[in-house]
Length: 119
Image (tube, rainbow, N blue to C red; front, side, top):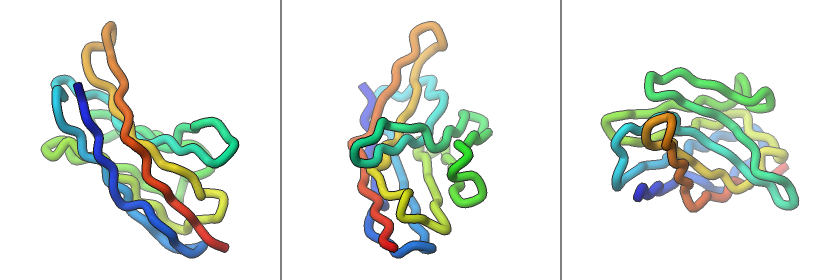
């Protein structure tokens, strides 16, 4: 089993910044991608950013240029630096990680952290 512990959410005014952290523990051998999803009220969970084991990042268009994802493999931790936040960024943010070989990969989720951006 893998446990993911998130931190860093909160309330911020539009234009402000927040930094989310997510630390993985447990059976984390062969950890592959880590990243972030978010879910706003009444909407489906959507991908925000992915970081490969080698540090390559991918972002969805609506956060490009504003959010930066990174990871520290030594600490088994993934980060999401969010700048120029907008009210529409308000959501519960979930970190995830993929563990195991490609043919038998498991995905684990954090408990979620609330990000609220006021206008």
